[in-house]
Image (cartoon, rainbow, N blue to C red; front, side):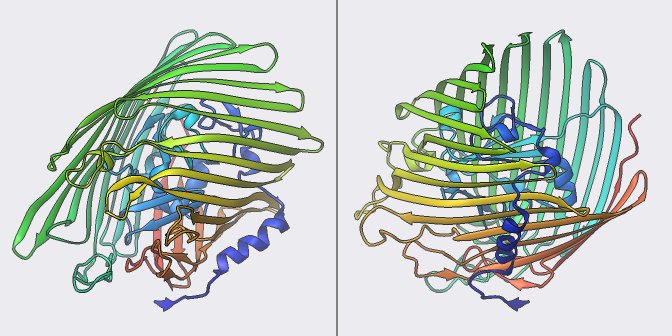
Length: 623
């Protein structure tokens, strides 16, 4: 592969040039009639949202030919990704410059993630089972509680479409990638059911170029081999209209993963993980303007580590998280375009581990109240939430938003909100390296936005600031305390336009995220966040043939809090083709990282070079 060390990547430049030329925004024009639920916990049209939102629907997922959720999210507005190697390796997502554990991740309305370190294993969520992804940028703790400091990402799994539908796909790619998926669903007048399964396996690349010798040598391991990955998933959904206005449904998503990585006998070099989301929901619409929704669920994140060597395979550790949760929400409309929502959420985290934590469970009970109203061209939103946690007691958060629509599709928005993140089990209870007296991390954020929606084009620009206090860090005695602070400022410009048969989407982000704690590192940039990121997608159909190009890039970033280790920026170019062989058959091909650029998002950890992929898809008409 060829080294690439330009400070500002080509892809960011392309996106910056494309955004003003297109004068367009985050969602396709055909998507403007879509509704999003994550930003308010109620149905809201995208163009009416008072906080920045983005929807990546199934059509976009398939058109991108992404083989993982991180690949789909790369370069999106406000998002920085880091990955410890190739496919399936640990991936961290920084939303608007906040930490990866400051982003709440939901699957079908249920909170996922590890209670030990607060992270969600995005790389293990199978993209074949995803219907759409909703991204909310900015704090939503006033509706969801802990973790929603930088925003919320909600993944909706695939459900049944009208009629009897069947589908299957087979694919191969570089590094001996092979994947397959099958699905069967049926939706009638009163009931629906769907079943899908997926398989993906790759030999991968060498995850880390570090060595076991020396300080700061990456993964501290001498393992110059391929690090493979395997994911086997199943997604089951079903529902029934029990009576007029009353619906019930249930869903199960499970992904079993095997992952090889570079490590030692202490950290392991192989992992067997399981992600599981199991839930049931009932919704009753008493009248047109009154509804009650209740949900029960359980999510599991199970991780077992092993060390494999010429001498055999030995067990290293187990960290299993179980999150039981329940919620009830009442939505009542009144007056003209007025909505009042109230609800309660209950969460119990349980931990089973080979490490003896001082505590292994805790409960959280939250209650929220939200108002949404429209008065002609004016739109308002306000929410307030209180959380009562078994460990740290009570915490209150709130948010307000205002929007003004004026003339020919123009819209101004302003919002402000507070957020918080509860300390993790590692922070509080890990033996010898914790502090049970830690308080939640707290944030204050503001956002100003302007947008315009036209026929076949739209654009939005948002500027924001977030201040985070009581960040958990180490004092001079290496004690874990609420000592750090951060100040984050940034702007995002995103857009879409349909011109002469071409669909063009541009997303550009600028970020200034700095340490505000005082001391030696005060004013330094927060590590592993690129200052500029961008993405430009261009697609064009020529009869049965569709051609697409994606340019994705990021500027330089620092790998440490002292800002002494600098990682160069990068620019990636992907090409893709799609050809309809017959009404039911489609052939897709992709070349990723066409220019074979060498880059790192974490020091010492390799990223894939040029990659090829070919897949065949079968989907006949519904019966």
